[in-house]
Amino acid sequence: MNWGRWRYTTMAITLVISAGARGESLTYHDSIPVQPTGWGYGLSVPQFEPALGTLEAIDVRFSGHIEGTAGFESLDAMAADVLLEFAADLTLTGPSAFEALAQPQVSWMASATGFDGVIDLGGASGQTWLDVVAADVVSVNVPTGFGLGNDWVGAGVVSFWASSAGNSRGSGTGNLLLQFEQNAWAGLAVTYTYSVPEPATFVAVILGVVVLQRRRRGDAEARRMAR
Image (cartoon, rainbow, N blue to C red; front, side, top):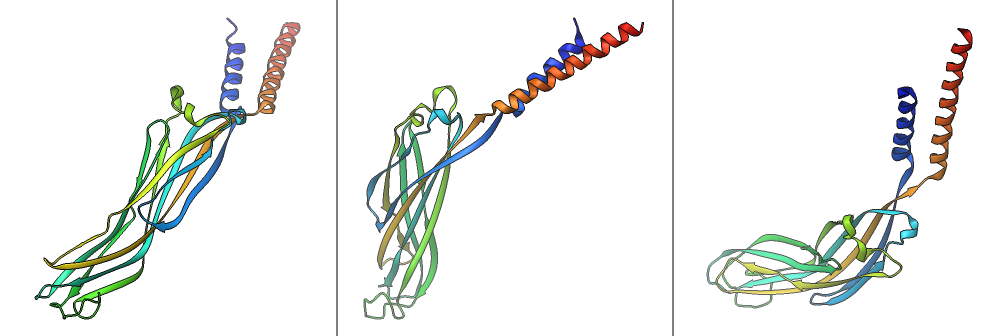
């Protein structure tokens, strides 16, 4: 066997595999406008067009944002520390049993005296907060091997269902009046990462190997003639 020739052939194959494609990505977005929690809506993005290249990865980013007000009134006779939690659960479901859960939340402590006789979510025994905001972002990688990403490939759309549910609460006294007003927004971003063949690279590598092989044959012929 001509081991020198085999060595150059192996080099050519290795170069084609490592440099014969470039990575690209494409991101699509959809969202649900801010509104009181308790909603459910459909979201969609275009499927990956296989003519673009070979799909390598799918990344889904689901964003949940909540905003609103929170207030309490302690009706206890004794002073107390009150814990408030402003929170919501935002769920996203999609094809191939896809599911993501965003849980924006923020919590804080407040002190209150014994009930001051007026239910106004203020004074010495109560308090109100305006412009309370919380956010959460969840990223999920969708498997693409062995046909697992087929629902995401084609000329159609990928459909999702998003829903929200308020989950705010408070604690600290046995007699506690709470009031929350909450709105929620959700955003979806789907990124397709794919590889694109580069024919020019392939041709350049092959031509380079041909030149090397011809030069090697020429060197060998020159050595034979010198003998």
